[in-house]
Image (tube, rainbow, N blue to C red; front, side):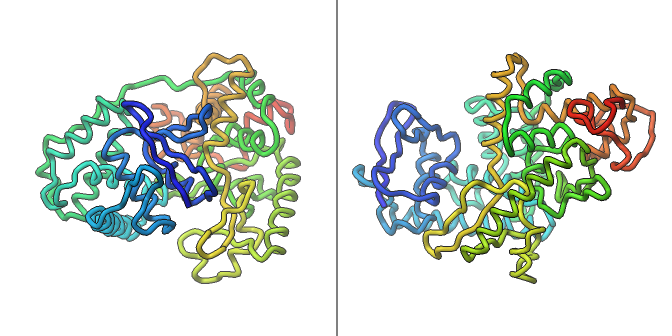
Length: 413
């Protein structure tokens, strides 16, 4: 396997695969923070920083495709010292992951916290024991000043760091009295009108269109829609079960009646894909919370398959094992951005905008705040909106605002 690493300009160096490459190598580059794809020259651009270089080398080393040499013509090698630092970092992240799992944090939180701790430890090559409040503040300041991250992203990084120092380094974080907390800016969410929602949806096709219709029709988050499995849809009760939502909580949302025929037809198509995978000797899917350990056969059952499987099977180059994950978030995000442009909408709309629109349109239609809070999965009603009128209704009794656009009801709420 050849990886060509060359200087590009003062801010970036380029990474290219001149010969044969695979998905594992591609992901090694994709997982470097702030990497960019140059479509004109067909090369990846990596920030010209020590942290980015180290991240790239470690990612390449983790693929197992290289021994000592990590790149081609530039003679970039992974030294013994880098190997030791890499192993030390991996052990630290493993300890972090084990603690997070023991405390039943969600997979998404584990991935997020691991990312920030990796980035933090790569930035400081000092002994882990010597790191503390000073380095935390420097790291957070750099995120805000140089990388221009949002307040919520900065505070997420802070939460990861405090968890790490408290639970892995076993330091008393109560002494970290001067750590930087970013102040949240109160912003009004972008909301589309019903006509704008219909216009954007009209410019989407196939499974992407169906996924966006579910975003607006149920108020689910993007990752919640993409993580749906066949068994999560209950056509008899007109409900969808959202499992392991934010905070690790399950909840139920309505299943828009106007989508039932589309969903049933879509499931038939997914069944054809799954049957082909089984015929080829594969068809197993990753299960939640170690269910797969109890029954490997269960992982091949159709009910556990993703509602939105990726187009191609992934292949482990070492073992030859193949499988299928759900489609990547970026695919739907790009499709929505394109549809918004095509619809001539100037609002800064994204996939999450459909969730805001869902909540706003339900409240406008007379549904009470507590009901909308439960559908959105907010732990505090103040997150939805401070409102005192409480009327609890089950998810199956609520008419989705999508039904007023696509039919399935008389359009009244």
